[in-house]
Amino acid sequence: MRRRERGGPTLARSALVTLSHSFLSLAIAAAGGAAETNALKEIVPPGLLIGVAVNQDQSDGQDAAAIAIVKQHFNSISPENLLKWEAVHPEPDRYVLDPADRFVAFGRQNGMAVIGHVLLWHQQTPAWVFAGAGGALPDRETLLGRLRSHIETVVGRYRGRIHGWDVVNEAFEDDGTWRQTPWLKAIGPDYVERAFELAHAADPEAELYYNDYNLWKPEKRKAAIALVRRLHAQGLRVDAIGEQAHWGVADPPLAEIDAMLGDFAAAGMKVMLTELDMDVLPRDPEMWGADLSKKQQIRTATNIYTDGLPAEKQADLAKRYADVFALVLRHRKTVSRVTLWGVTDAQSWLHDFPIPGRVNYPLLWDREGRAKPAFHAVVEVLRTRGEVAPR
Ligand code: G3I
Image (cartoon, rainbow, N blue to C red; front, side, top):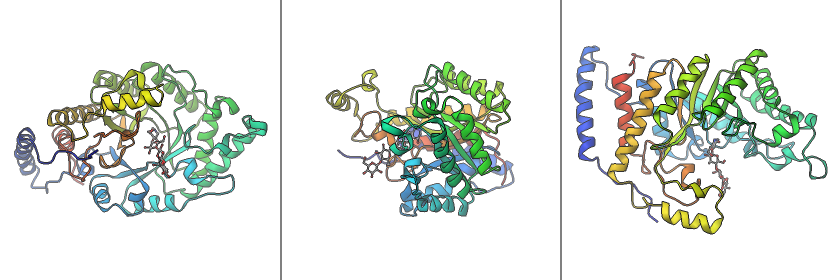
């Protein structure tokens, strides 16, 4: 299976770029000759962070091409996996923090807002955390004790150096009911409060977020807003809600995203798109519960761009990214950060989800690190509709 994207710019893109350049020359002349830049961090509106998730190779300095993109375009980084519980705290008395130290140092040396992801989740958490006597869950106090040590150690270590933490990830089902995780079952619904309380005590300066996916679905969004209201009513710090934004090229509809951002604004809450990417492959409603042989069949039927993403699909992806960034700009008083979940198409969890072993194209740079039409479309939107402030 070949993993490559088609090379040179299409005619349509060249025309778009030419148009954009002539517009720019005028804008630059009017602004007194400031140097032209396509660096995303230079052209987002003031106050909007633009971030990217990096993997350990990147924060360890082993992926020069991706690192160059990260440094040029982003003013915030998130760790794709290396700060998760299984990575930093694999056994009760053993912490592995060297990779996380290097990640935090990389971000700080480059003047970036470093995001901590994630303190409490039901996935990528080692089995010992949820182990009680005789194979049962631990009792409330035991699990709270484990959570306390974890948060005090990890948040405490980076006190003053991590800009904001995803404190709790994915507490709700799509219908707005509590997700039945070991955290909920062993502690009860106030596990969320306790996690925010502990995180704030360990680093009073750090921003704290509730992070979930599908918050464009009204029931789930309502549950998240109610949760944050409840936490605020108890005097707890919650700075923003994160919508992960693992989206498709057509789904969710823009109107739903617009409604989501509008509802957060009406609730007086900040929102972040914390894990933005766009799945370009077809989805099959049967793939979620499919057994292995069914998954194999679905893979064969849906892995349709193994030789590269056709130009018209590149254009659809570019339009989708442009539309989403345009919405972000419309809601710029509500949206405080947009983070892409990966640097280039070489690095995306979507090659293996929801069906392993497919070839996907969800990000702004291709596998060789070349900017895709989607990147140019985002630049265009930011330049023409954003408030470009001199920095
Ligand atoms: O580290 C092992 C490696 O030793 C092994 O050889 C390899 C074989 O599969 O697996 C490696 O672990 C993988 C890990 O990523 C590190 O690459 C896991 O299999 C894989 O499941 C894991 O996937 C991560 C996923 O979270 C786990 O749920 C993705 O990289 C990561 O992008 C994804 O991120 C999550 C966010 O944290 C929360 N929101 C949803 C998002 C997407 O699932």
